[in-house]
Length: 249
Image (cartoon, rainbow, N blue to C red; front, side, top):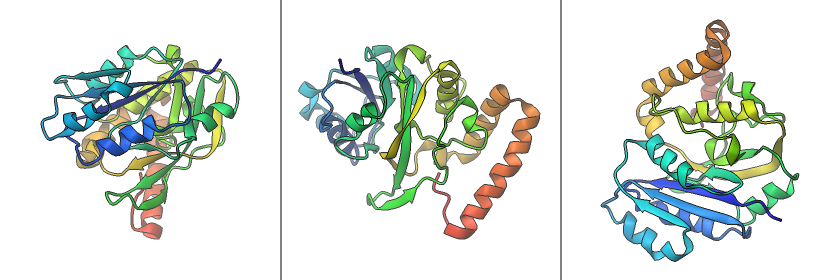
């Protein structure tokens, strides 16, 4: 029997990108998908676009929220699938058969993950993320940065907990680490599994995002290792920028 995947999309006032994300999920060849859409009471035409597809969406709510992770917690609370993944507005599965290929990689894993392609506002490819997905992923894999993106990780729902509301921009790092600590079997799928639209709140509020990331890593990995790791992170970022003139986070 196929595992059911709960795909959760959160959106607020993103009429430009929401349809692309909706179709990326709805056009998957994998049949066992529970699609959940959480809208933050959009008023820019987003709701009208979502309602065109409402009969193909398992659960849909539109109401004000307290921010990104509050909305994501609402989606998580609604999910009933065996696995969960967040595919937020602007992001896409890499291809129509991506979910099928991921689950065909190996049976009964606690976490599946893969590589992410970055795209710009014109949907032009910027190539792979600067952080390459590791061949072996564990909860320690984020010590030098978020090496697997949120859109490219499928987690057994029973391993997940709510996002920590103390973090406004980087709670996804903490959320994945906490789940990975409980995971026994973690499987990497071949190739790209997601497309990620660059930008977002963590770019707009970069300093706050970095402070949150440091605090999360300090809590999970310890203060001294985190300070030393950030020396390496800073060097790697600077070297990548010198070679490519962009960061591709």
